[in-house]
Image (cartoon, rainbow, N blue to C red):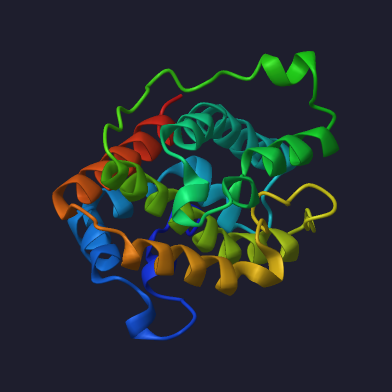
Length: 212
């Protein structure tokens, strides 16, 4: 299942092998076990089927909303993204989740009733924040394959009718991935802290998405 794959950052990138900092690949290798387990979560596996139901799809959107509604604001406030050349608003996925849910009649009070992730990861340094963000960016890149499967399923959903979350960067996906990798490459990264932040994010994704 591709929804949470950071491998898409380290694998399907623009600019070839040299465009990606080696630390991205180490992040994936160090979390390979968790990455594999993520791909086995039934909630997400359901999206692989051409016969995915409306209820199954909505369950995924709600679960993702419960995570991003907590994680994304924390990441946004953790550092001054503009100072390192990143427009955080351009990378927001929460707005796309809200838009998708609205397409299914979920907004306002009904949106506030969606359970939120209660686990809050602590990110104490720039390197930790960037490590966690690398996992989020990887999940957005990996969502491309999921978007294609949803579009070809019986639901036939695209960015305009309920699958904007999975199509978030659209035609700019390669550009956005390359831009993030470039920012990481020029930072004075503490490798241990970066990997620690990435592991925290990987573990959070798995713990939340695998919970009932």
